[in-house]
Image (cartoon, rainbow, N blue to C red; front, side, top):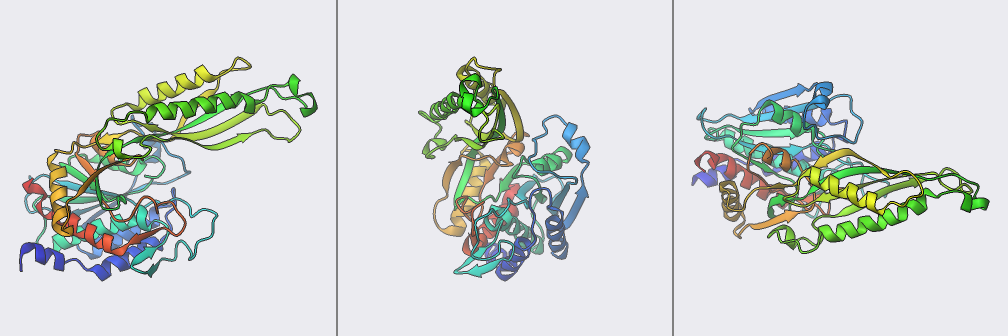
Amino acid sequence: MTGWDELDAAIDDDGVVGDLGRLVACPSLGGAEDAALRLVADLADRMGLRVDLRAEDLAELRRAPGYPGEEVERDSLHTLTVTAPGRHPDAPRLVFNGHVDVVPPGTAPWSHPPFRPRVSDGRLYGRGAADMKGGVVAALHALAAVHALGGPPGDVVLHAVAGEEDGGVGAFATLRRDAGYAGCVIPEPTAGALVCTTAGALTWRMRITGRAAHASHRLEGVSSVDRYLPVHAALAELEERLNRDVTHPLMGRVALPYPLSVGRIQAGDWSSTVPDELICEGRLGVPVGRTVAEARAEFERVVRAAADGDGPAPEVTWTGGQFAPAETPIDDPLTAMAQAAISAVTGVPARLAGVPYGTDMRQYTARGIPTVLYGPGSVEHAHAVDEFVPLAEVSVVTRVLARLASGFAAR
């Protein structure tokens, strides 16, 4: 039996499925992730891994430079670090990152309760199965397998974090304490692709005012809705410009690499009154190679230029998640090592890709840590009704991560 055969045999596929079901069954909506983190900590402790679960000082974090923002109410934040100790204290360290927070199940009916996981046709269904509890459990079991065979060359660590969906506060807190890693893999759902590039995504809020009047004397008022319409058209034109002639070799393959979406509009308070205020919120995609400050400035210029003179200029504020773009070169040693591990486990060459959404990847690359995404499931099923992850993909990703963990220090 080769070393790789022993590593493969050390992975308990039934245990992976069981632990994934337990984690999906633990509701962990944004702001209420503590129970899920305690569950992961308990699982890791039983595997003999080193566990550090701690409460963070939210007030101090919110004052820290670079704080990534948040969109959900929370009065506590815990972070969890799980370590498979390395055999050589001075060897390079590898980190896996996975978030346990999930988005709400929505109002449309599910075929099965979202927090009562079920296995059918080789898939595990439930909120968070794909995004990204499948990846968290795969990383945990990869660490356990390598640890059971004597440990990796250098420390391999799992950052199990809260608050990724609304900004990334969990990863931010964890990295402030320790960012001494030579590489990072984030098992977000990538449908088999190795993602080296992610777009940025900024949440914004806009307020446009008008002048109220009785609807029967509409001309005496100024409708905030009418004032908004040219701004909406200008935003559509901005999206078209952002996505015109994209030359990045990975992002250029994406149908719409940098979306600009208006997700919420609210105006008026009475059907027969000219509305004097409109509030809208949305998401701005940030191209790779552009800074968050540059993206904000361009957005604000477009809004100002489109505004009419019938009242104050629209007010733009930047709220919630503020995800910068992230990129690891396709010729980075980590990329090559991940490609080799994927090919060895699957028998086919790894497919490189870029994605149009933000992740915690940018927090690691900003600290000089090469980072890639590779995990089970597809983003098409994340946040969706009847979310699921294929169990065969969870098994493959567990083995790929185990290979990376067992050989990383030799990169």
